[in-house]
Image 1 (cartoon, rainbow, N blue to C red):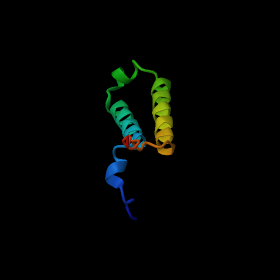
Image 2 (image 1 turned 60 degrees about the vertical axis):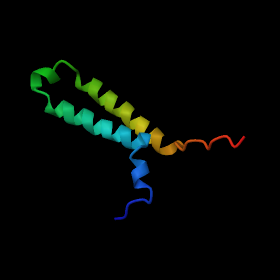
Image 3 (image 1 turned 120 degrees about the vertical axis):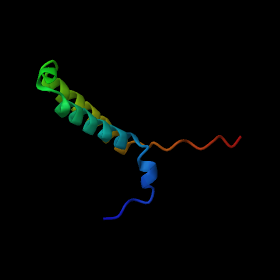
Amino acid sequence: MKLIADWKQALKGLSVKAHTAQVAIVATWLGLPDDMRAAVPVKVVLVVVAIVGAAGVLGRIINEDKPDADPH
């Protein structure tokens, strides 16, 4: 396995941030006591994770490069 050449820059991208957020949401959910988990329906958590995942896919396909400075 080889890392991509600009892997340090990839960590700044929307897709990596979104997927990190997914992991944080699920890990937090699993770490909550049962009585606290009961306050939020599982479907709500799944929808939030799905939306964040879709943002990660979108972040993967859009160009996040900053435009070059105006030469004028």
